[in-house]
Length: 378
Image (cartoon, rainbow, N blue to C red; front, side):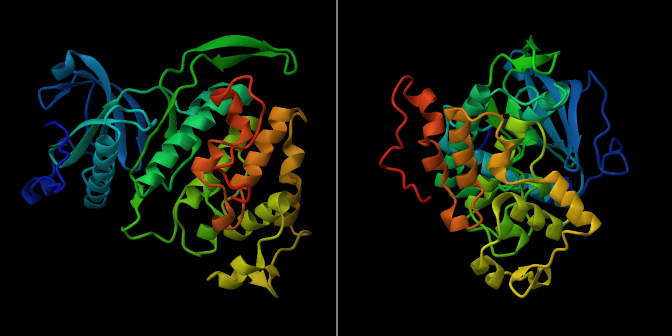
């Protein structure tokens, strides 16, 4: 079945949905072995990854001359099938609006139902930017590579926003290299060899949580470490929450560690205040989470165990600079604009792309001037 781009999307029949295959594990995962062939077409080669949604396997697509593809096999459980239907709708929209694959979003090739398991085939990509970082002992990416990766990520997110979509789950695990071949480079500062990715071309993946403007907006979105303050404070969210997530991602590429290493809302807000200053009064007053505040200030004891942890773990953003060179200062100027508390003041993806940090990609050798079309306050 080829991808259907017609406006009315019909999913598989209910009788098929309710069928439970003897090849299902108790938790709804499909039981398979290397060499198994699905739909007389997809030959399973290996498992690439696993998540709560199901598994991703590498396959040979014999209808495409044996080309290698990635196949996402959704668990045979109703809530995951429903989520897969929503993801397919998003992927169809992306395919329709970007038929030439110019906007750095992973492309759906096909989808089908296999005994109650929704299966979605994609172009085969390589390691995620997180997995590469982990394999490299969390040594940071060089700034010139961050620049190229950031430009593609922001281009992809700008494309989504223009088409009334918010990704809502941006993180290093959901940004994949097209090819993760690398060279070994000796790092004299670290006195060790490190992996240097040869090609920083990336694709944005996992649209299972992507939300159209007209759809219901869940109260809680994003993986914890990349969650924007307006989400934590339950102020409602829109496109700017993606920009906050990108800021956290780029910091992680630059330093090699997570900016907000926490699992608690109040502690998360305390970290934000340590890094970016006090939460604006306007946001506090509008928040549905008044339990986090006392007399208009975050109810936080810096002398407690958690308080000492935050103080030791976090410092003002500019203190993380690894160099005071021009491009590093430009990078941190960009991070500050992406990590603005107020969503309405946060820089937009279209303005991110014309920030001076990206000028070497756009006009090599040109003087670094902010384009007039971008508002400095955003």
